Length: 258
Image (cartoon, rainbow, N blue to C red; front, side, top):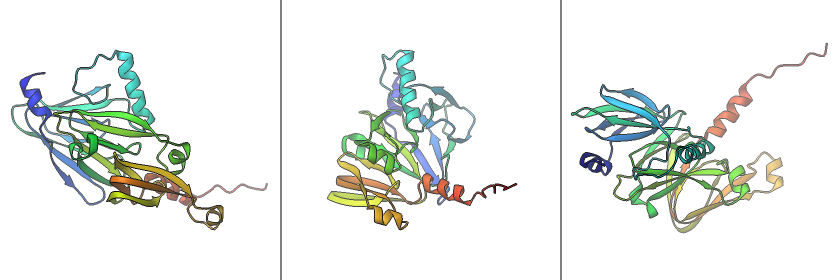
Protein backbone atom coordinates (compact mmCIF):
# COMPACT_ATOMS: atom_id res chain seq x y z
CA UNK A 1 0.00 0.00 0.00
CA UNK A 2 1.16 3.54 -0.67
CA UNK A 3 1.73 6.08 2.09
CA UNK A 4 -1.33 8.04 0.94
CA UNK A 5 -3.47 4.89 1.01
CA UNK A 6 -2.39 4.11 4.57
CA UNK A 7 -3.20 7.65 5.60
CA UNK A 8 -6.61 7.63 3.91
CA UNK A 9 -7.52 4.19 5.28
CA UNK A 10 -7.70 5.49 8.86
CA UNK A 11 -9.42 8.78 8.01
CA UNK A 12 -13.08 9.12 8.98
CA UNK A 13 -15.51 9.90 6.17
CA UNK A 14 -16.67 13.54 6.10
CA UNK A 15 -20.44 13.36 5.66
CA UNK A 16 -23.77 15.17 6.04
CA UNK A 17 -27.10 13.37 6.28
CA UNK A 18 -29.88 15.19 4.43
CA UNK A 19 -33.62 14.77 4.88
CA UNK A 20 -35.92 13.55 7.61
CA UNK A 21 -37.22 10.09 6.80
CA UNK A 22 -36.35 9.89 3.10
CA UNK A 23 -32.66 10.49 3.48
CA UNK A 24 -29.50 10.85 1.45
CA UNK A 25 -25.87 11.25 2.54
CA UNK A 26 -23.39 13.70 1.02
CA UNK A 27 -19.71 12.79 1.38
CA UNK A 28 -16.68 14.99 0.86
CA UNK A 29 -13.77 12.77 -0.17
CA UNK A 30 -10.23 14.04 0.24
CA UNK A 31 -7.67 13.37 -2.54
CA UNK A 32 -7.08 9.63 -2.66
CA UNK A 33 -9.86 8.84 -0.18
CA UNK A 34 -12.09 5.81 -0.82
CA UNK A 35 -15.69 5.00 0.05
CA UNK A 36 -17.27 1.57 -0.49
CA UNK A 37 -20.97 1.39 -1.32
CA UNK A 38 -23.69 -1.10 -2.07
CA UNK A 39 -24.27 -1.43 -5.81
CA UNK A 40 -26.82 1.15 -6.97
CA UNK A 41 -26.44 3.45 -3.95
CA UNK A 42 -24.84 6.32 -5.91
CA UNK A 43 -26.94 9.50 -6.14
CA UNK A 44 -24.47 11.97 -7.67
CA UNK A 45 -20.73 12.37 -8.29
CA UNK A 46 -18.42 15.33 -8.71
CA UNK A 47 -15.92 15.16 -11.58
CA UNK A 48 -12.79 13.12 -10.84
CA UNK A 49 -14.52 10.69 -8.50
CA UNK A 50 -14.05 7.36 -10.22
CA UNK A 51 -15.63 4.04 -9.33
CA UNK A 52 -15.43 0.35 -10.11
CA UNK A 53 -17.31 -2.78 -9.11
CA UNK A 54 -15.34 -5.38 -7.17
CA UNK A 55 -15.90 -8.79 -5.68
CA UNK A 56 -14.64 -9.30 -2.14
CA UNK A 57 -15.59 -8.43 1.40
CA UNK A 58 -14.44 -4.81 1.80
CA UNK A 59 -11.08 -5.69 3.37
CA UNK A 60 -7.98 -3.64 2.58
CA UNK A 61 -5.67 -6.40 3.81
CA UNK A 62 -4.12 -8.25 0.85
CA UNK A 63 -6.16 -11.39 0.21
CA UNK A 64 -4.93 -14.71 -1.15
CA UNK A 65 -8.38 -15.65 -2.40
CA UNK A 66 -8.75 -16.97 -5.91
CA UNK A 67 -11.39 -15.57 -8.22
CA UNK A 68 -13.65 -18.42 -7.11
CA UNK A 69 -13.11 -17.51 -3.45
CA UNK A 70 -14.04 -13.88 -4.13
CA UNK A 71 -17.09 -15.05 -6.07
CA UNK A 72 -18.24 -17.18 -3.12
CA UNK A 73 -17.88 -14.13 -0.88
CA UNK A 74 -20.12 -12.22 -3.27
CA UNK A 75 -22.66 -15.05 -3.26
CA UNK A 76 -22.72 -14.82 0.52
CA UNK A 77 -23.70 -11.16 0.13
CA UNK A 78 -26.53 -12.18 -2.18
CA UNK A 79 -27.84 -14.43 0.59
CA UNK A 80 -28.24 -11.34 2.81
CA UNK A 81 -30.24 -9.42 0.20
CA UNK A 82 -27.27 -7.37 -1.01
CA UNK A 83 -25.64 -7.26 -4.45
CA UNK A 84 -22.89 -9.54 -5.75
CA UNK A 85 -20.40 -6.66 -6.04
CA UNK A 86 -19.27 -3.73 -3.93
CA UNK A 87 -18.75 -0.36 -5.65
CA UNK A 88 -15.45 1.34 -4.72
CA UNK A 89 -15.47 5.14 -5.12
CA UNK A 90 -12.18 7.07 -5.06
CA UNK A 91 -11.32 10.74 -5.37
CA UNK A 92 -8.70 10.70 -8.12
CA UNK A 93 -8.13 14.46 -8.08
CA UNK A 94 -5.82 16.66 -6.00
CA UNK A 95 -8.67 18.59 -4.34
CA UNK A 96 -11.69 17.54 -2.22
CA UNK A 97 -14.67 16.26 -4.20
CA UNK A 98 -18.22 15.40 -3.12
CA UNK A 99 -20.65 12.62 -3.89
CA UNK A 100 -24.04 11.48 -2.63
CA UNK A 101 -25.63 8.13 -1.84
CA UNK A 102 -29.18 7.08 -0.96
CA UNK A 103 -30.89 3.93 0.27
CA UNK A 104 -33.04 1.87 -2.13
CA UNK A 105 -36.07 1.99 0.20
CA UNK A 106 -37.83 4.58 2.36
CA UNK A 107 -36.40 4.95 5.84
CA UNK A 108 -33.56 6.31 7.94
CA UNK A 109 -29.79 6.17 7.55
CA UNK A 110 -27.66 5.76 10.68
CA UNK A 111 -23.91 6.53 10.71
CA UNK A 112 -21.83 4.37 13.06
CA UNK A 113 -18.18 4.13 14.16
CA UNK A 114 -17.52 0.43 14.55
CA UNK A 115 -14.50 0.90 16.82
CA UNK A 116 -16.86 2.38 19.44
CA UNK A 117 -18.54 -1.03 19.88
CA UNK A 118 -17.41 -4.39 21.30
CA UNK A 119 -15.04 -6.25 18.97
CA UNK A 120 -15.62 -3.47 16.40
CA UNK A 121 -18.60 -5.54 15.24
CA UNK A 122 -22.26 -5.00 14.40
CA UNK A 123 -24.75 -7.63 13.21
CA UNK A 124 -27.64 -6.34 11.09
CA UNK A 125 -30.69 -7.49 9.20
CA UNK A 126 -30.31 -8.53 5.58
CA UNK A 127 -30.17 -5.56 3.21
CA UNK A 128 -29.17 -3.04 5.93
CA UNK A 129 -25.70 -2.19 4.56
CA UNK A 130 -25.50 1.06 2.58
CA UNK A 131 -21.84 2.11 2.52
CA UNK A 132 -18.64 2.24 4.58
CA UNK A 133 -15.03 3.29 4.68
CA UNK A 134 -12.42 0.76 3.46
CA UNK A 135 -11.55 -1.94 5.95
CA UNK A 136 -15.09 -2.79 7.07
CA UNK A 137 -15.21 -6.53 6.42
CA UNK A 138 -18.55 -7.98 5.40
CA UNK A 139 -19.40 -11.58 6.35
CA UNK A 140 -22.57 -13.57 6.92
CA UNK A 141 -23.91 -14.89 10.21
CA UNK A 142 -26.62 -17.49 10.54
CA UNK A 143 -29.40 -17.01 13.06
CA UNK A 144 -29.16 -19.40 15.99
CA UNK A 145 -32.54 -20.95 15.23
CA UNK A 146 -34.85 -21.30 12.26
CA UNK A 147 -37.67 -19.79 14.29
CA UNK A 148 -35.66 -16.65 15.05
CA UNK A 149 -34.78 -16.18 11.41
CA UNK A 150 -38.17 -16.92 9.91
CA UNK A 151 -40.61 -15.41 12.37
CA UNK A 152 -38.55 -12.35 13.33
CA UNK A 153 -38.56 -11.32 9.68
CA UNK A 154 -34.76 -11.17 9.49
CA UNK A 155 -34.21 -14.21 7.30
CA UNK A 156 -31.90 -17.10 8.08
CA UNK A 157 -28.74 -15.16 7.22
CA UNK A 158 -27.71 -11.87 8.84
CA UNK A 159 -24.97 -9.41 7.93
CA UNK A 160 -21.92 -9.05 10.17
CA UNK A 161 -19.68 -6.00 9.71
CA UNK A 162 -16.27 -5.93 11.42
CA UNK A 163 -13.77 -3.05 11.25
CA UNK A 164 -10.16 -4.03 10.65
CA UNK A 165 -7.44 -2.67 12.91
CA UNK A 166 -6.17 0.80 11.88
CA UNK A 167 -9.20 1.34 9.63
CA UNK A 168 -11.60 4.25 10.11
CA UNK A 169 -14.50 1.86 10.80
CA UNK A 170 -17.15 4.19 9.36
CA UNK A 171 -20.38 2.33 8.59
CA UNK A 172 -23.75 3.53 7.29
CA UNK A 173 -26.84 1.34 7.69
CA UNK A 174 -30.43 1.99 6.70
CA UNK A 175 -33.75 0.72 8.04
CA UNK A 176 -37.45 1.33 7.55
CA UNK A 177 -39.18 4.29 9.17
CA UNK A 178 -37.67 5.82 12.31
CA UNK A 179 -34.68 4.12 13.97
CA UNK A 180 -34.59 3.93 17.78
CA UNK A 181 -31.39 2.98 19.62
CA UNK A 182 -31.82 1.10 22.89
CA UNK A 183 -28.89 0.39 25.22
CA UNK A 184 -29.11 -2.77 27.32
CA UNK A 185 -27.13 -3.31 30.52
CA UNK A 186 -27.52 -6.99 31.32
CA UNK A 187 -31.22 -6.50 30.58
CA UNK A 188 -33.96 -8.14 28.56
CA UNK A 189 -36.49 -6.55 26.24
CA UNK A 190 -39.11 -7.62 23.72
CA UNK A 191 -39.86 -6.01 20.38
CA UNK A 192 -42.26 -6.55 17.53
CA UNK A 193 -41.22 -9.27 15.10
CA UNK A 194 -39.39 -7.85 12.10
CA UNK A 195 -38.44 -4.56 13.80
CA UNK A 196 -34.99 -5.72 14.89
CA UNK A 197 -32.56 -3.86 12.64
CA UNK A 198 -29.10 -4.32 14.20
CA UNK A 199 -27.29 -5.12 17.43
CA UNK A 200 -23.79 -5.29 18.87
CA UNK A 201 -21.78 -8.16 20.26
CA UNK A 202 -23.00 -9.06 23.74
CA UNK A 203 -26.68 -9.04 22.74
CA UNK A 204 -28.47 -12.25 21.79
CA UNK A 205 -31.99 -12.68 20.48
CA UNK A 206 -34.62 -15.33 20.04
CA UNK A 207 -38.31 -15.50 19.20
CA UNK A 208 -41.33 -16.31 21.30
CA UNK A 209 -44.83 -17.34 20.33
CA UNK A 210 -47.53 -15.11 21.78
CA UNK A 211 -50.09 -17.91 21.88
CA UNK A 212 -52.60 -19.17 19.35
CA UNK A 213 -55.49 -17.41 21.07
CA UNK A 214 -53.83 -14.04 20.54
CA UNK A 215 -52.92 -14.96 16.97
CA UNK A 216 -56.49 -15.94 16.03
CA UNK A 217 -57.78 -12.67 17.53
CA UNK A 218 -55.66 -10.69 15.09
CA UNK A 219 -52.63 -10.07 17.27
CA UNK A 220 -48.99 -10.64 16.44
CA UNK A 221 -48.03 -14.30 16.38
CA UNK A 222 -44.40 -13.79 17.38
CA UNK A 223 -42.13 -11.27 19.02
CA UNK A 224 -38.38 -11.04 19.51
CA UNK A 225 -36.67 -11.31 22.90
CA UNK A 226 -33.28 -9.65 23.31
CA UNK A 227 -30.99 -9.93 26.30
CA UNK A 228 -27.45 -9.05 27.31
CA UNK A 229 -25.36 -5.90 27.31
CA UNK A 230 -24.92 -3.70 24.27
CA UNK A 231 -26.78 -1.55 21.76
CA UNK A 232 -29.88 -2.48 19.76
CA UNK A 233 -31.33 -0.53 16.82
CA UNK A 234 -35.07 -0.91 16.22
CA UNK A 235 -36.86 0.11 13.03
CA UNK A 236 -40.41 1.40 13.29
CA UNK A 237 -41.57 0.34 9.82
CA UNK A 238 -39.74 -2.66 8.33
CA UNK A 239 -40.12 -3.07 4.59
CA UNK A 240 -42.09 -6.28 5.12
CA UNK A 241 -44.91 -4.30 6.78
CA UNK A 242 -44.97 -1.76 3.95
CA UNK A 243 -45.12 -4.54 1.36
CA UNK A 244 -47.98 -6.25 3.25
CA UNK A 245 -49.99 -3.00 3.25
CA UNK A 246 -49.41 -2.49 -0.49
CA UNK A 247 -50.45 -6.07 -1.28
CA UNK A 248 -53.64 -5.70 0.78
CA UNK A 249 -54.50 -2.47 -1.07
CA UNK A 250 -54.16 -3.98 -4.54
CA UNK A 251 -57.64 -4.67 -5.98
CA UNK A 252 -58.32 -8.35 -6.48
CA UNK A 253 -59.69 -9.57 -9.80
CA UNK A 254 -63.22 -10.81 -9.40
CA UNK A 255 -63.85 -14.21 -10.97
CA UNK A 256 -66.87 -14.42 -13.19
CA UNK A 257 -69.40 -17.23 -12.63
CA UNK A 258 -70.15 -17.35 -16.36
